[in-house]
Length: 392
Image (cartoon, rainbow, N blue to C red; front, side, top):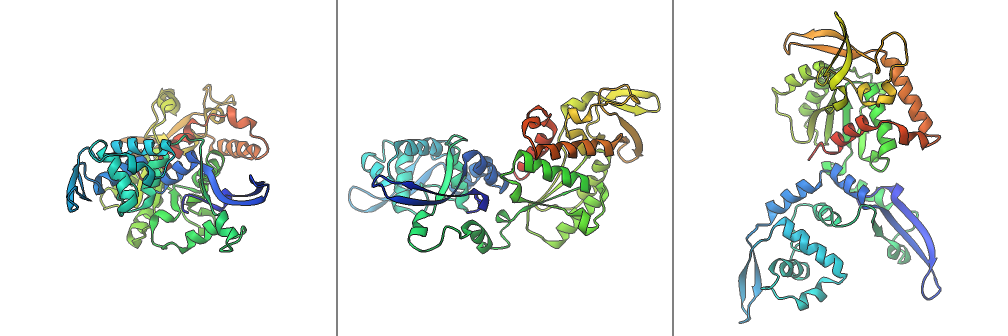
């Protein structure tokens, strides 16, 4: 049930072939969304391949009853993830149950396929995919479907049988019943350098990927009185490490000099696998960005020097409409100097105006979706993909 949320619930009635009214109760969403949710929980395609290799040897052997009626070890060559996926695709397309398919397949002719069907009928694994969590199998199988296909769990029979009602929040109750310390079932915590970053990421995620926003929780700067800066964020990371917290945590630093200085302090300690220290991704368009220094305006690559979240809000948001600076985009001004890194720290001018413009844009989106198409989402999309792939 971790692949669903209560917002996925569907209830409706229809007339069946006997002209009787039937009630349908199910959780449903597109395959594309289910893939993304599994990826967020750590069950992405790459980790699924690794899980297969870890538990299933290419030179696989199983016990089968031989011609003489005795049990014997049968070696299966080429038991790879790719071959498993190929045969699973064939099984799905056949539209038949495994007990029907296995009757017409010889183990010598199609050993991988035969073993998958044999394990499904007689073994301890689903279609011969031994793994530590069934969600790895789900992730592998749904890769074989179109993104627009429906992935659903129909619990209508449970309702008809009186085991639950249509109104029961089965998904929510199931999630609560899972072990609290099982990190994959908990929300991933996102922490950033400041309150503006959190507000931007949270609201943008709600616009771009509303179906997965419930898989994350965000650092509350407003009510916790938490300080915002690169060094403060590094301090929060150290606190999480020291607490022994098993929940997944993504620490997102700016793409600038101050962030690099702060991250250096974290390189000296062991960061556990459930905590990811990341920076905002590389931006191609800021390789020639207007900056203001002692000698006036100069165009240069500000990646790693002045990449605050404002640079990711869209080029239409950053367009310089004022007369103060003769540049297309609002320029970056060089400020502090890092002796350790021998780099300057830059800061985009008129941050307040930029943020106000972006939040006003998001407010307008709640009224009409038309302006969403024309906006430059490239920067925010890069940040979203960084978050989604944090635990690849």
